[in-house]
Length: 386
Image (cartoon, rainbow, N blue to C red; front, side, top):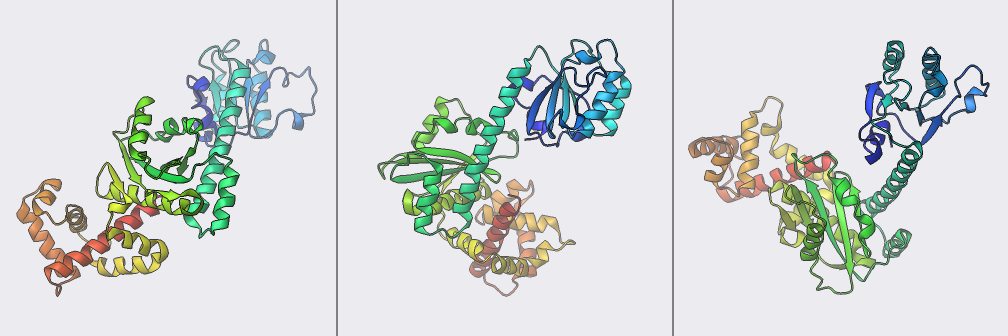
């Protein structure tokens, strides 16, 4: 948790940053209250007043008659490693300019309360958020291991036991991705529902989100139930791309289900579809496994075949046309619409692309090779930004 996260809590949403914007990245591990600690009349052991990485809350009562105490207090907080000072504007609505200037120079955030927020409630909400974040990190660490390691069957059982959830026999997984226009904090809406999933879980993974449900029956209508559940909680999915796994026994097939949903959502995004089932990917599944198990070999093929289109001085229109051509499955008219140009322009570009990358191939071989290279390129690009 950092100061910026602290400002996103429901109770602090009306706080204002009055100085130290460049310090909002500072870690927050605690929230403490400052009363009279920096009054010259009180003698404390200064290095034990506040713990480092704390947001310090204060009404600034200690400086009620002596505004000059404020600058010294800020200097001391910085020396003690505090992450920020948040003050309630009851004594001072605005702080002296010298205090704000010094805090700005030191990249030390000073925050002003938005209203009559209670110190104790701020502390409780902050600690609750930190606890939730710790649990979320734990879940993502577990999923990362299942996704990325070759986990033996006995290890799968052990890992699932660590989650301490009442899982049923069969597992169903959806992986969700957000379109570019959606709010950057879109995951929080879904993650807030995680405690309500009794025989499954919800967790972030890189730039995506896993929704995992288990059931006693292989015939469980996971997709239907999932969308009904999201509708019940009024969660819009208009800007979300879904990838779905097959059904597996959780004790043996959980890692496979996770990977299937994850790569299905990537290909749904590549193909600009609202959803994709892994079982419907056909030969694209071979490309996924090739890239997953032999990424260097896969990218060597991409870079050698598409080299004329990927060079720094290459015509970007040619590269984008090649990508769209594969995404539109070779439909010249649809490619032309996507690029706002005449079909003959696309035909000209495709002839030029063919001359650059595979001048001796026939139509079928050229399309097959171009499709494999483009899809591996896009898959690599998606995974590379995760």
